[in-house]
Structure formats: structure tokens, C-alpha cells
Image 1 (cartoon, one colour):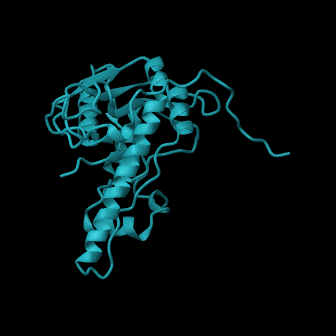
Image 2 (cartoon, rainbow, N blue to C red; image 1 turned 180 degrees about the vertical axis):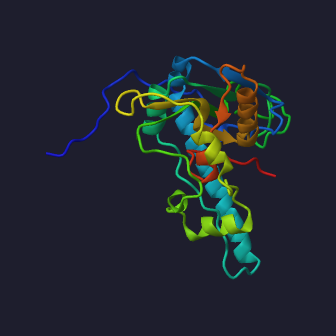
Image 3 (cartoon, rainbow, N blue to C red; image 1 turned 90 degrees about the horizontal axis):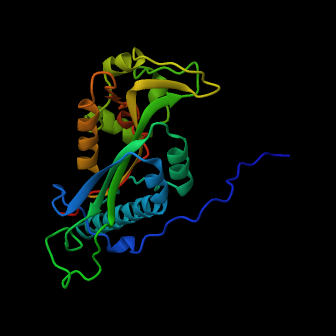
Length: 262
């Protein structure tokens, strides 16, 4: 008989009192939004529904813009309309598991604060009746990097590091569009980092390497990641965390973001 994992019943998720299709794009300078540092796990648990719905909305908007771009290319006589490759939104199961198991865990959240139009321009309540204070526009969470394989190693020079790449990713590497650890220096530094633990119990923990575990946004992805790196670099010397870029550099990090429209 095949074994199947299943989740036990828990408390009902806190549902937002707004529709994510009404959430305005976040301005690049966060001028109409509030940024908060989240350090309590329960705060993230209470926000699981919002995190999931934001990821779904970011993917929907990216798909819509991609379709418009493709149609425009066709109308201008482009022989082969190009479509941006899109990833699936983060699932609620994955989000729940990361929030439940990541230890330590902290992050950033961006929410609406002053009325703006849907495209993120200054507005007022009368002109933007669907706007509400506290709408989630973006988030990012971090934990210490952990693995459960005793044979694991950082090695960006191994062919296996790029073994699952498709032709498009390979071309992006050749053209320089895709940044990666060309000389292996980053992987060497990460491999030399202090680590400890049992891969069969708590896992092998790298206390000085930070891992981005969840990431989503409607126009604020870049500023969120920049602020995250600043916070990591400004930690005191005893807890300094080196941003774990390995997954980001090979395109494997769980990310659901949509860029602000022009």
C-alpha cells in the first residue's frame, strides 16, 4: 500500500477583506506604502491566505502583460512572437511548510498606507473607492540555510549545477543576461562557511548563510530584496549572515513577483 502524506485539520485561515485584483501596484520608492519587519511566526501564519493570494495575483498580472506583449509583437508583423517564461505561483502547501518548519524565520512585508490609483499614482478615497489601508503588496522571508544530505556541497563549476537548464537559460548565460558564479569563488566561500548538525534529525545548519524562502510582490520585488540584503549586511559581527545567492544565481529560488507597469 502506497503511503500518502496528508495535512491534519488546523484553524481556519484568516481571509483578507479585500480582493487582490484591487491591490494597487507598489511604487518603487514605497512612498505610499508601509514596510514592516516580521519576527513572529504567528504573524506569518495569520497571513498565509494573503501570501498565497498575492502570489496568484502576481502570476496572473505577469501572464496578462505577457499576452499583451505577444499580441503586440504579432500585430507589428513579428515572425515569432516571444513570450517571457513564467513560473507557477507558490502553492499554499509550500508556503505553509516553510512557515511551519523554518527556524529561525523573519521577513519583510509591504502594505498600502495612503490612497493611490491602481497603477500606484497618488490619489484619494473618492477617486479610488476600492483602495484600503493594509492591502498586502509584497513580502520576503528568510531563514538560515539548511540541508539534509551529508554529501551536499556548493559547486557552481560542476556540470550538474546546470544539468536541468533548458536551451533558453543556456542562451541567457552565454549572452550575460543570466548572472552566475562563473569562477566558483562564491561557491568556495559558501562551502567554507561554518556548519553543523545531523542530516537525519535537525539537518545541517549553516548559521552564517541566509536563505530566501518565500518571496512575492506587486512591483516591490527589487526593493524588498535590496532591503533584505542591507539588513543582512548590517547584522552584528556575531550573527552576520551572508546572503545565500546560490539558488538565485541558477534560477531555482521560489519567487512570485510582477514588475510595476510603465
